Length: 568
Image (cartoon, rainbow, N blue to C red):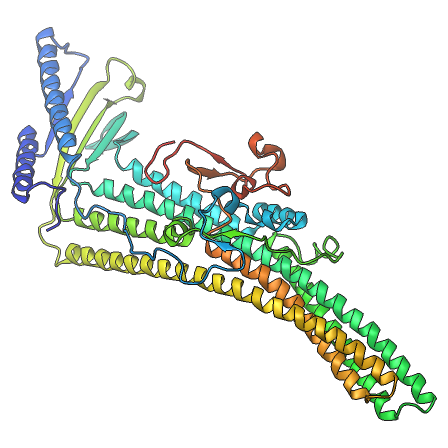
């Protein structure tokens, strides 16, 4: 048997029996008052007073019962109360903080627009357009609106339902026809005595908050993907420049070998080796251009644009963005409060905990009140005249499942198992978040060490190529040595360019793992897809080169709804 807040089970049973007895005492299941006015019979003042007194007595009794039930039901919520988990987290990161990494506290605003630290206006512009045009982000916004609408449906279950009704009926008996016309209002209210409705509201609110965290998660992933693809574009342009520069140098070498061959100073073998080296370098360029076009298409897709729409804008090569000299990463406990995937898993756990209470509430009796007021007449034209009969009905309903072959009990077990799965999913989300940060920390620091070695190796390879060329011209070494040094230098230049991009990419992955790219407002944001002229005034400068507020650029206004249980 599920617990009812902190009340004793025997007290609950007495309350249920008392409530059932009070409702049955009203009129054994239904109370009905009919006040009829007939054309040939006028109601005397004494009869009218008797009707009024009876009506007042029933209304007072129902009102007292209703307020008593509501006062008691405010403390009776079946199922477990949700307690936010407090996972054990390491006090510091396991990876050694080097290469500019510090354990300083995270700046929420700086984290919201981390790409501004790369000092690339083109990247900042792409971010703004991606956040306003990405289709996956817009789909997540629609899912958030759906979750909020479902929350509104759950909240409406707390209130009475009022309906207008009307009917017309005709019957004929032994050649005599009779008509009946009715019009009025009907009301019904199921009392939430054991908190089943309240638990469903809690579940819907937690699901809405989980949908909002999912939106943040999509935003974090989107900003990281835009940055990674932009860096790849600049890397491919750099590698194309290196390949074209090497091709030009090898063409000069090939021409030199041809001249020496014509002068009888070089063999045909050297000529063929030079030509082979030249054509091998030429073969690299088409594959690099293919990769560049494909990356530009991916970037356009992230912005919600047609393939090829960014080719002209990004046709001019630009340097690969440089990582800032210092990067604050905070501590594990601080980081996990920012990671949307962890926050989403926690909200889903809260929702599933509330669903256990919804399933538990099915064990207990349900009480509902109903009533109607209206007019009825044998003629439609008399329906709104004093000749119509006035009707007032007040009823109650009581139901309690006595036997269902274990259906309710098994449903409670199902919800408890789902809650256990949600606990495991939350723990998994924490471990995954910690792993992602640790991986990014190691990769960022170690890639900087690798890059420094590649810088020294590239400088040595350039000097070796120059020495080999000069010695070959003096006849001190063979041409194969020249070819080997040229290949080595070309390879190292490519590796250095790749390492430059990897340093920045690892920083981007680190910001993604840290949950960078969104702002946690103190009020709930309601998404609206707005045009450029409809943005709020405080977002006019959003996503300029120095902007750091992506949520504003989405076009979402703030309202005064609850966020995590707190009012604006």
